[in-house]
Length: 99
Image (tube, rainbow, N blue to C red):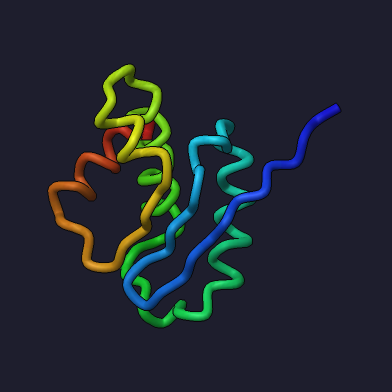
């Protein structure tokens, strides 16, 4: 029997925080969850990236979370889909998020 994962989502004008985002492991599940998150987003007009860019960032967080270093475990446990993300980070997300 498949267990339903309940994520806590925190919305603000500058960020969408997905608490314990590492629990969603499959890309297809991430897509479905992210679609729901963005549909319910009360600050849609403030977002500056595409669905695909957000998905790649989330995937990148999950990849880094599974690297056995303390920093990544703490930093990548949750995913922050921030507005005005640095170009460097977006570049990294675009590469690692494709894996």
